[in-house]
Amino acid sequence: MNYETPLFFRVMEYADAAERDVIDMVSGNPDWEPPEALRAGLRAYADLEPDRFQYPPSEGLLELREEIAARRGVDADQVIVTNGAGEANYLAMARAMERDRGNEIVLTDPVYPYYPGKTTMLGGTQRFVATDGEGQLDPDDVRAAASEETAAIVVNTPNNPTGAVYPAETMRELVAVAEQYDAVLISDEVYDHYDLSGRFASALETDSAHRIVTNAFSKSMAITGVRVGYAILPPELVANAKSRHMLVNVATTRPGQYAVLQALRETGPDYYERNRERLRERVATFTDALDAAGAEYTTPSGSFYVMARFEDYPGTIANVERLIDEAGVAGMPGEAFGDSRTEWLRFALVTPRVEEAAERLAAYFE
Ligand SMILES: Cc1ncc(COP(=O)(O)O)c(C=O)c1O
Image (cartoon, rainbow, N blue to C red; front, side, top):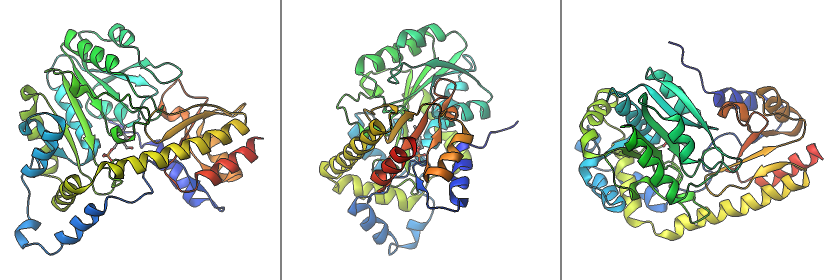
């Protein structure tokens, strides 16, 4: 089997090798501070007893699972602490496939490329449903694409790459479609703290044996390198997912879980609000420059990304490399996210140099 290396790595390598100064708008790594309690937790960990350097419970530290469960209104037994949202998505998709109700995974177009990658890895096939120009997903389109073959429907809100936030009605309907076809709705909510619209609705709001929610602290606490996330599964599905997590990973980082727990307990809402406010300012700065450059774009309602289309400059890998060389700005090619945004480029606003990048783009495309 041939797993495709995500295009992401290729662009990063190209940008790193460039002769000139390049502003990185490729990755989804926050450039801001983690919560102070997270740093304090990691520091304190170094001095703990040797037993704290041994295996944690496979499914995660009980206190962390209880803290997550209390916040999300579920039972702690339903929570598996994972190696980021990435592993949580893998567990969820694998669990849906092993129900033997079909091997098709319904995905959106544009799509976060790791979902089709994981689908192939798990021996499934992808079926794509196009979103509209704003990135909104019509549940009727999902219903039309779903069938007896559907193992899972995987969605992401707030969305990478479109910035769309799905309303509560959409989430309810998507759960209903999963129920109708005896499939599983998998809702990846890793950007939930970056809802700029106030309209974010978790799939957890609809109780169902047919939905799994995945999440992580990677983005919300600006710690993509710490690797702590989680999956919330219905009681009927959780046991096998715990076994798979144990067989693949044994467990995830114990110091990371400890520090995240400290940070959850001690970090107030102002930390998250500051991060959203910074993002709002960057969106405004960046989209002003896109206006000046005569580009078409979508203003994100959430997540870190802006998709833009410049005249006669399709979102190919060749054009991304040209933009690195000639403008000193690295983005992602729209073609990495499926067939529907091949004319577009995606820019991640997780750099303090957004204003400079915006000026470079405006000057280049003027
Ligand atoms: C939609 C989406 N899901 C999952 C991930 C991976 O999250 P984690 O680092 O917690 O594994 C990302 C990272 O960019 C993402 O954009």
